[in-house]
Length: 267
Image (tube, rainbow, N blue to C red; front, top):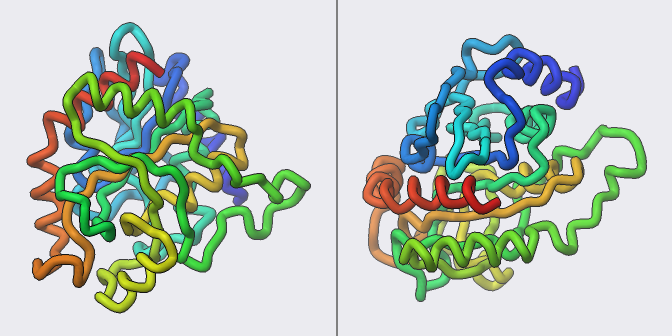
């Protein structure tokens, strides 16, 4: 079944809880547990016909509905990854569900490894642009002229300014940069990281870029935020481990939760 048709069927099951959300979020590793909204209601992916379950630690696998500052939002607590065996068209399903629920502004978040040596773990990076190195595109096989979507201004400049202002108000360190998505699940080699740096990437992760492409194809405004949880291979002497990624995200829990609430309020 086409991903958009599949998303319509899933959204119909959520409509009672959804209301009219102004903004949607896809929360990556370590982000989902930090988000708390007023009057929140969670619906597990596993309870929805046609929705795959999340299988990765740090991804609860819920759609969370609630408010902040009187504004309604829907949050995908977790996402679907290529490395779980999903095709690109399935990995973007949460984005399509948000769209079918009425969301037209989406904030994509992730945990990422810092490539720029000036970065520090716990910093946030606002995505100015991305490099999709997965070899997959969620628009392959779709019909119509819309598949030739313009990606020149994929990450909305006005949204970046809004997110940056929210970070300043909350005293959360952030910068802008270029993100590169790889397939995973193994971490990158030092040689790969050197190549990515030469390509212009500032941070690396295993999600987000293909979701951003699909959201832009749907006509959504897109913002992207990486939490730098570790330095990428070879940038420091640290061993890379997913448990450490989650631990760093947990240390950022209060700041991340405050930022999500603030963005629901102002977007």
